[in-house]
Length: 193
Image 1: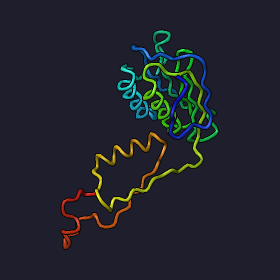
Image 2: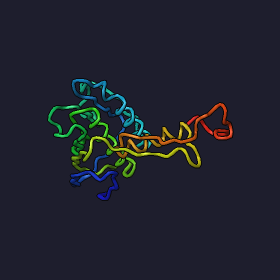
Image 3: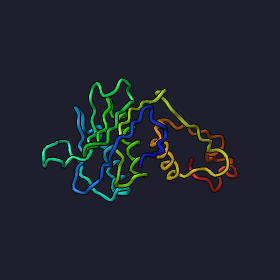
Image 4: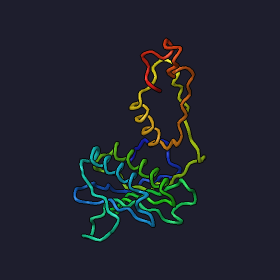
């Protein structure tokens, strides 16, 4: 499999020969001076591995243990990229590595890895990706004043989807969806949003 649809398209992608098989009994290593900063990202990846590859990999902050037990390394490393939100993703040699100079860069690298998992399942193509955004702030404005007002659950799902595409801001535009005490006809049968 060499055709991937990744959103947004990474700046540099090199498809290599070979396939990386996702197998059971491996771990996700959180590496760097502050491995706790990677916990949310690692848990998101852990869930994606369960859903799309059918494996349940443990999280660890140490590389001790059997040789080959580390399946994915998430690493905050100075010099990994020249961009604060940039990342390097490598899938090869029985190892998957996401490196960046910040936790947000690792998060964006994991978002790309999850998109690959969604398309490839347990058979990932070997590749190298180097990516970074043009702009530090990338956002969406959502008009919640007209037609159906979204529920909190819908907004959470939308935020997760946008974050997976590396959108880091959402602005909710509203005009009349508040519960004004003297004007109940305006807000009747509407959610708090």
